[in-house]
Image 1 (cartoon, rainbow, N blue to C red):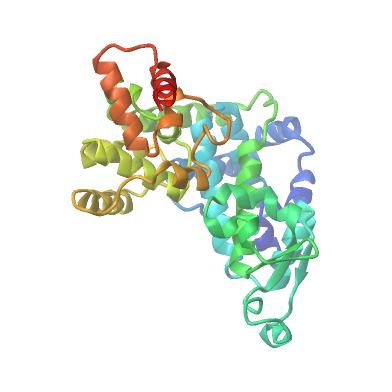
Image 2 (spheres, rainbow, N blue to C red):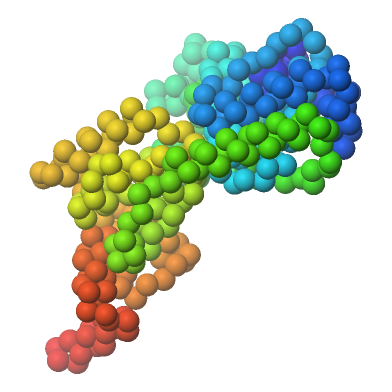
Length: 374
């Protein structure tokens, strides 16, 4: 079904995996194969592939008309597994999934359907060309596919945007209507998850591959050092509400945040008086960080925050965006019961810290007293 070029473009495909197994059935076989001198180019290209991901550059498709080209991707994965750094794996997942999504955007419907069904076992129904969909209501005509809701839910909830919530979708007999572009996003998102979730025991590597691993580890250390955010005072961070604390920690750890999470964090930090430079520093570790775009977004929020414009989302909005860990049962703070906005939490907690108040149960006691008086 897939051409040789498509196997290189979609390394998660059944065909790509089978082609790889012709040379190496598992990682131990692959390591031995890469140790042979005539396979040196695979090791070099795989190292470049990982470095491109680390530098947030597009993945370069290597096509030398050699069947062994298909081993470059698994070798790049082998390098990342050997290093074992969460941030590097995140960089690789973002770069690889972006590459796949760009290729998918140029494919015909049948290729997307085939990849989803054969590689992931998804259940899909193509709705036909636009004329074949004319019998549908005007609301449903733009959707080229239907996908089983359980397959949709494997990936969609991680996108956070309201349109990916099942409650906001058109569902028919357990099948969710989706557009071609949405299927592209789901496939690339599933590939992203496969990279993030994969674990394997790495065998002893040949000399040249070990050298490349060491070189990339050095690059990674430099990268982490250069993206280290400006440290806020313990007093400032100690006053963060649970939602902001978690988003902040994930951001500086290099996790790819949703748009809603980034906006909430940036708007919050700007509102409590942090500079644009400090806020920019918080996002530098993101796998998809683009300085010019980040600067524009932060400055835009900053200019609005100075007036009557952007403020961080209130607690109910944070809950609706699945960004409130207390609402989700993942964290707890007594103060969250008595405030309606992250900034209210910050102001109260900062006051407590300034007064050296460690016992936070005074909220409930104060509330109980008011109830008795009333």
